[in-house]
Each structure stands twice: as C-alpha cells, then as structure tokens.
Length: 461
Ligand code: 7TS
Image (cartoon, rainbow, N blue to C red; front, side, top):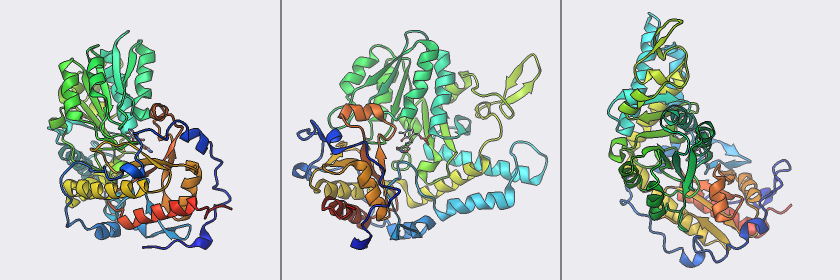
C-alpha cells in the first residue's frame, strides 16, 4: 500500500476553498439518526446480489486506463469521482483517434467511401447500444448529448403532447436536477403539477407513498434507476409495472445504472430509458435516448434541421424515419463510435463480473469508512451501487476533499445536483466517493487512512 508522506500533508494555498458546509451546519440533529451508518451497526452491511467473480482481474483492467499512470500532487491518481465521470480505457481513446485519422466524414450523405465508412461506424455503434440495452430495434436508439438532453427531449416532445393544465408529473425525492428541471419547464409551459415520492430513512423509495401518488393518475412518472448520492438501486421493474397499471408513461434515468448493472429495457418495460456515454467509460458529449418505437413514432420532433427530414418545401416538411427524426444536424459521430468501443470493453469484462466486484469493494469501503470516528454514511439500501456519500464530524466536507486531493484522491463534494435530497437529510452537502471498475481495496485503505490523518490534524497549516 502506498504510504502517506507526512511532509506533503499541507493544504494547497489556492485550494483550501473556504467551506460553506461547516460542521455545525451538517451535524445538527443528525447524531441519533438511524439512517446514518455508524460504527455500531457497520456489520449490517450485506449488499444483495450474486457472489463475486473470483477471476476479476483488477490489475489488468487498471493497465487499460492510461490516466491511472499519472500522479496528482506527487501521488498516484486515485479516481473516486466515477459518478461524475469515468476515466477512458485505451481502446476508447484509440477508437476516437482511429476515426479521425482514417474515416472522418459526415454520415448518411456524400457519395464517397469515407461517408460510407463513417456511416457504417456510426450505425454499428447504434447497434451496440441497442444490444447493450436489450432494445428490439435501432429505430428506438436516439443519439443525443447525454442524459440531460434526452430528458429535455422527452419533456418537450412527449411531455408537451400528453400533459395539460392540472395534470400530474411524478418524480422522486432522490432525483438529480436533470430529472427535475426539465419537468419544471414543462410545468411552466403547461400548468402541470409536479409531485415527488418521498424516500424512507434507509434511502429507498417509499413504495406505499408511490402507489398513493399513482392513484392520482400522473401522466408521466420520471424516476432514477440508481441514485447518484445514495447509490440506491430502485425496483424499477416493479415501479414501471405499478405506473403502467395506473396508466402513466415512465422515463427511467439510467445515468448511474448502466455502468454498474446489466440493464434490459424490455425486461424493465421502461417507456423511455436514458444514459450518458461518459459515465460508462465512453466519451463526453454522447448519450442515448431509448424510447419504445410506438411512442417515438407519435412524438413530434424536437429540433428541426438537416438529417431529421425526408422532404422539405416552404409549405411543409415530412420528417425522416426513426431514429433520425430526433437527430437534427450533424451528430457527435466520433464520440458515438467511442461509446461503441466502451460498450465492447464493458461487455468483454462482463457486466455481472463488474457488478459482483463493485459490490465487494463497496461493502469493504462502507465498512471501513463507518469505522472512522464521527463518520456518517448516507444510503443504506441493501441494493446499492458503488456510490458512497458521507460526512465526518469535525471536518467540513470541502476541506476534507481538498485534503484528499493533496494525496491524489479525487472525490466530489457539495449537493451533487440533488438539492431536494440534501434538504431531506437536513444537510447542505456531503463528500462522495464513487467507485468504478478499476478501484481497489488498497485505494480504499488509503482514503480511510488519509481521513484519519486529517482528523488527527495532519493537514492543518
Ligand atoms: N441523472 C443522474 C442520476 C446523474 O447522476 C447525472 C449526472 C445526470 C442525470 C446528468 O448527466 P449528464 O451526463 O447529462 O450531465 N450526475 C453527476 C454527478 O453525480 N456528479 O456529476 C454529474
């Protein structure tokens, strides 16, 4: 294990970051709360799922990621900010480079070889996404910029079509702002009413309350598959079935799910499922909207322009077939190809193997973090991914994050774009370590050891 160099344990002058998340702010009224994991109950850490795959070769995987070779502040980089974005394996970097070196062209137009090659590469990537999600047809796979853009598209097309004055839109208390604000824009435009399903103390959706809110017959239910703060894996199949029973259409935000669990949109019966490439070891700027074909057919286009048309006159325009109706203008071709390479890479490791490994290191990290004096962990669902949000009494989270950075450890701090959830817990923010396929127990040990050192005052100027 890498040892901490006590001499380097000083805070960077430009990085101390005056914290607004003072200990007093976050600790009041929370000490007895049962939803925090404390040392006394850290043994209750069974995470449900299959047993880990013992052949999982984490060292081999680490070698696939060039950035893990670099040092930050004199220490090997420890990337615990995977829920914000993941690092990229060499195969993804090479796929991007190869595309620009050899095949760069616009797609679906041009009578030349490179246009054919680029179109084939783009459409092959779409087929990889279709297979990855278990969708029936590539007509159901729309390339967009990411999760945020996909949710806005659904709100502004499907939403505007079906939602009217006084209609309900049902969200949950654990949504990312990306799955709140687009619905508020729709609310402003239509006079719809947004309701949020509360969560339990353990950080799970309260299914009893969910059913009650469903009886008001919302037009749209928009729920996250996995919470980006708590890691909770929501019972999506069940929730979709319940929503359908009450006649609602369901959008599932898969941004925090697809990198961690096998997802099959047909099994889930989701009407819409959205995710971002950059959270599954692919490039930024590319993401996916899956929609059931019948729904996408009925929806009006969102943006107008080239590619999304079949025939244009000044009097009228006929739109292109699916999925192109929703892909106005030149898309992010190279990054779609990069996303295809990321999917191949994940499939090669095996999504069940990833799930098993990540569950083990998550259990270990939670157990070790819970041993730290004054540590409080948020999110106690037995079905959870590798997102761990926590606070340590006595250390403002922003200061702790910068101290960790001095050791090359990248975490995220703040409200995590989930302010309603923060409010529910009565805090302004937390520190978050989110683990990925290349993280190790040794890195977790270093995180825990560094926090202990901070508690002992090792980083005080
Ligand atoms: N939905 C969830 C559940 C997310 O976690 C995020 C990003 C988004 C939507 C938006 O994704 P984007 O790719 O369109 O930006 N979450 C985070 C996070 O937790 N830290 O940084 C980004």
